[in-house]
Image (cartoon, rainbow, N blue to C red; front, top):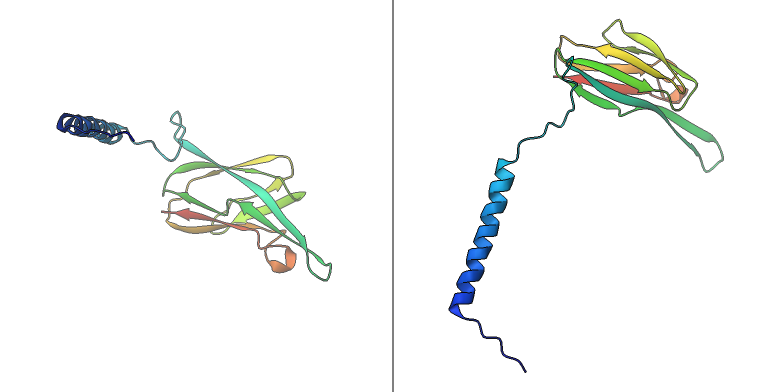
Length: 150
């Protein structure tokens, strides 16, 4: 059986080293600069937001095929007056004609293509991006995304 002898000097040295490591860690994390969560293009102050078209498809217990289309992500957030390029890539579905409720913006997203929609809202609120092909449950929807402007 071995005995471990702990001396007062060893305990003091352990606490000094621990305190030094803790102090250095706190200093490092407090000094680290904040990193923005949004990567804005600084050359022209236009932020790119990417969406895709998606589809869910399954069979019921009776064998009926059901499907639903959606924009993904289904909610995006903008600042009032912020300039944004909404870039939508068509993945599922041949084409999705759309409009943005409360605006004059409309267009079509086609499978395998990107559609770029420049946006800048001067009023706060929630604007709905609505697919005209899939507006409700009866048409494999609703395919609606929410553009939240603060």
